[in-house]
Image (tube, rainbow, N blue to C red; front, top):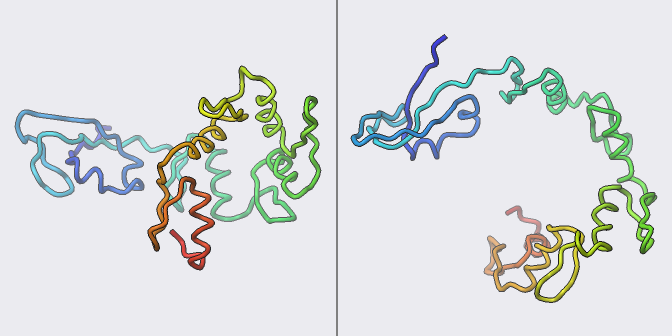
Length: 198
């Protein structure tokens, strides 16, 4: 079966919703003359995209049109629409496709911290948190601030810390002129405006 081909200009490509583009393949095209005609706005153009239909997987969700490469992926996803999860947390109602995921979730509802550090006796609910923490005891694995020599167990922790050494305040309140270094500080500030969403 021949693939259906059309063209779109740069401007229209930017404005097409991701839902529409999901089943399309976009390849950059250019010409010395305006030899392509945009299928969206009918304007001739010299640089834009050649558009062909992607071969649709046989595992497409009928509710939201998401495509999956396996039957089990589609089955797991369909639970999001029906909320008919095979395993459900009795405490918060969150659903899971596999028993192992429910087991991994359950410590959130407990005060028990079964993963203990052998070096400083810190304790954690989840094993990945202990593994990240252990980096703090290994100078070669931990992340050190070059400005104040503080150590952090993760790159994300160091990145958040570095905002303290910067004058940048990228998080701006949409209601008043206040600006913040960290998003969590903006979130806290928004509560003063009566929990208005931003």
